Length: 239
Picture (tube, rainbow, N blue to C red):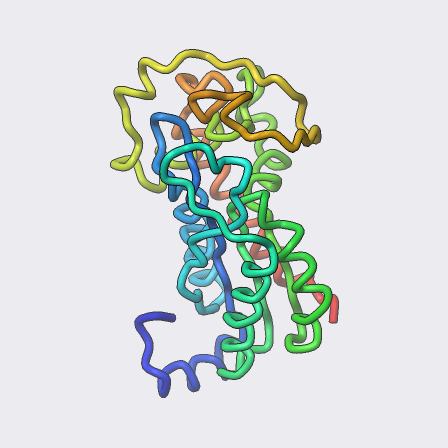
């Protein structure tokens, strides 16, 4: 979207109809991945889906609610009220431009509840179809066979996220840090939430056996995610 003029966007909206908002975060992702990982992945998926579906991608909402990571250097966080307002402003811009369908590609679990609340309370009044995709939750659902037997496969900055980044942005993966990383056994099972600063649980900001991150598995998983999202768009009609 950033590369269009307003005149071009007016025309594109009539043909494309689908506006896509990628949402990320700025927070620690182990010693081997950049703090912008969530946004990088969300934006990449958004662009792939847009190419397949003829949609338009807004500028990345690069920061989210990362309060649990606030004691790590580099973390940026906003509260839920601010994130809600940002989403509302971006979505209103899409609506005003003439887009009639809204897809939010969310790369950070801490943003999910706010996005759901905005879609439920406001977005359904503006768009014919609205949908949120929670990237890492979807990845865990679609990638069980690809990461079977790997400790902490779907943990924060773990083998799955690392494998995906090895495909999307291999130059940003710190290979030396990855090759020398220790295996960190997850303390809690998936679905457990403990309101404590992440650094007290995982001092190096990751968990799992990240040395077993396989880019081939990451490539297959990304293909599954994009295919799933495309099909979900075709089926979604909640207005």
